[in-house]
Image (cartoon, rainbow, N blue to C red):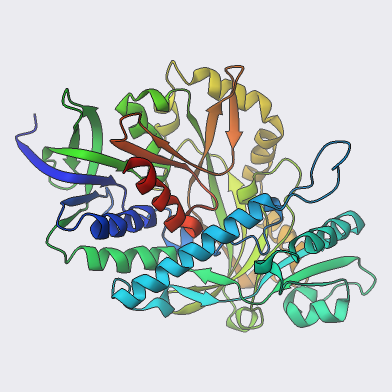
Length: 454
């Protein structure tokens, strides 16, 4: 039994960039009000926000081909739908402005450790893909943000953009690329860490680590009673609060289910793990300076779009290729193998079964990905970088993502590749589910939470 009951105006569950961003907005909007942020790991921003656990791309629609699908239908078939790319571009630039504003206010002490300019490039092979990329470029260049995007089918020009990737290629190979010079590499974990460093020094903000929220229930007076267990000392306590935000990445769904709010019914989660190939040769790393995105294989999830990325992590230039998808029943990298089974309830079992049936190509794709060995992964890398040597690369584990499974009109589940905010009718609890573009649009997403709840 919990012997201690604490009080806080706002409780944010999860110590990633989403909670850090929301906490800053609450700190400014409600001066002096108590804010408590609970994270089960020893440090903040060690799960999905941590640099090695995500692509580090400032997603703005510059190079991500899955953001610009071809339209379907007799009239519009084959034309490019730019809606998602434009929306994400606007949200990223709004979020970029927020980070710069935080630096000016002193919330972020060293912005150069957080964001760095790096070109964003789309690269494709084959006639159909080249035709698609050219149509995409024509559609996007009319939009102000994408006006500076360049397109080329000329081998020599593309070689200037990505010399490493063009080595060893047949001069007759049909390829094309778009080049956007002012893209960004973002260390989301560093941004969150610096924001939390500021927040932790404020009298009205409490950062609680090594603590796991295992239950939450609404009281008769519409407040929330949150049950917490300290990981190290084993102490239990409760927090009473007026407002709750669940931003715990893959851990958000189980907590949302415990809330028993009507709006959470029918939701499920589909966990997808990931691996990177990390370059260990400094000479190779130095010769590549871009984030290069290709086209996803048929049946693969958007988070598995192959890309070869220049990264800045802890002040050091890195080069990663991937991600390679996999399947696990964990909802978090530091989670439990029982996360998926425990998430199955009476009101979401049909959603889960329906999503599995309707996404058989994805299931087959994941089975194939899990069976890949190091040699197989290197062969996939050589489609991007033909001269890659096995000795220059090693496998590192990426983060865990939980894609949303949402009940459709027929009562079956549909797999959603995006982020979604769930807010209770009384606006006292909100949760964020889903993955990409996630952290790249963190300010816009959390601003939406503020607008919906207050």
